[in-house]
Length: 459
Image 1 (cartoon, helix red, strand yellow):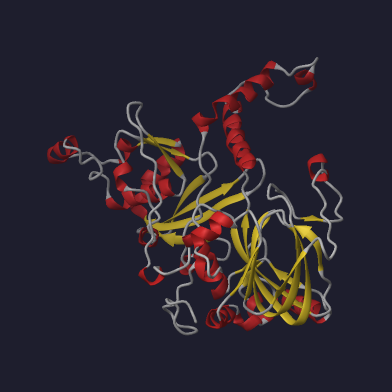
Image 2 (cartoon, helix red, strand yellow; image 1 turned 30 degrees about the vertical axis):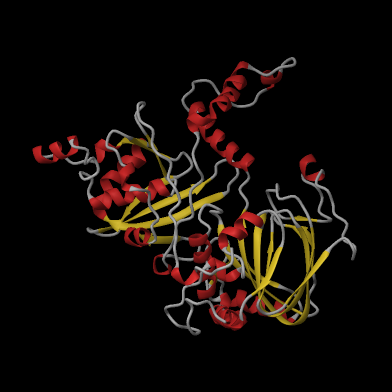
């Protein structure tokens, strides 16, 4: 049977939910028991497979390539398409890592909506191969992989690994890049030391980061879809935050904070390096959360550049509680996010949000919020100052409004659109609230989702 909320193939009312891809588990159980821990395999119902297949043009290479992008977000040319078709005809696999067909968008939106906070670098790719193509040799990926077989059959050979990996994918025979890389245990891959999963149309396989696998096409023209989610380790994020803090301090100093021979004289390190290292002792003072992955609208997005209106984000409940906007509080821009307002005409504006690490080059956020141009001034204030008291956003008050504020109605002085923008940016971890010393801002609690049609779903 198809999911209760789906309807027939091509019906506009169909909304894919992440739990549809991992039956019979609920999303919460999958995340708790399998995410980042162990392999999970299942299969889709026939109706959902049909819906997804249509969403990927039934595996037609030329139609799919037309809706895929290269790493720089540029479309493939006709000549490049012909080259990909020639590769496939010559038994060479074709990999399209950035796919934006209707099915790919549905899968990405389902993960963003159902697994908020479990990833912010999320993409969907496609793999085309045939019987006789060179197998994918033993390797591990630093990201989460959820693969759905659309056409043909593949054998996936898997061996356990360690999820605490980062950087590029690592092949079994690749030369180590450093001692940490060299110390990764190499698994036995003999018939009795590995697991084999035979993926047929509708099969689903989740492989955690760091787990070794090899893939072999075994029947027909093979088309598979892969949802991949970057694995953000604690160690990496702590380093990102501390690097941002250290750089902001270094830019305010007169002396050069660069490594030189005097820094390592004797058995210790220089005072300058000790001062930089001391910043790590006060991690909480500069702590910030990774940017969330924003829900997006297809009509407001262009390949890798996602976007949505404020009203859409409100509809998706992607915002903090309005009660958190106390006028005596302060909002601080995340040190890892840039905010750039761009006017489109007299009435409309786009707010570009970007987060690319200066330390690792990792892409944490690339999103555009579409709103009215009345927000230009407050957005510029945020971008220019980095830290703004909420009271500075409030227009001059009448006596009646001042009296209402004294009675505790502190948020009613914010224009509705500005209040909504602040709530969205705070929830998205683009802004952070700082309360006065005598107040504590309550921690946001996840909003509970209730779907009457799923009360009997296994948990």
